[in-house]
Image (cartoon, rainbow, N blue to C red):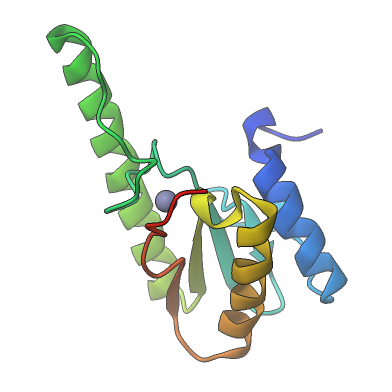
Length: 145
Ligand SMILES: [Zn+2]
């Protein structure tokens, strides 16, 4: 059984299946890491995080829109956003320090089939490269879809 149900979102399933087809098995259930990346490639020592653009504040992304809430709630949301960002940063830093590679795949990359066709190959490209830290998309998409 999965520890957290939300880990199994449609986007994660899409990426997981794509990686499986390319020969990369997900070891996130048995990674031995102190926290839970969405996808873990143990052999490649690579952790993949799939971040929702809204909750993790994808910089410049149209899905990271402002909260239209009343002032009192706004503070809570802002705190939640800040907590998420702080945790993301800390986990990335820890993984890099342990010699892992870290790839962040933003949700907007896989929001539509057309996008998935563009961005999924970029995941493989990154895996085949040498960068320790990567982000897909590198720049948030600007055109509407
Ligand atoms: Zn985004």
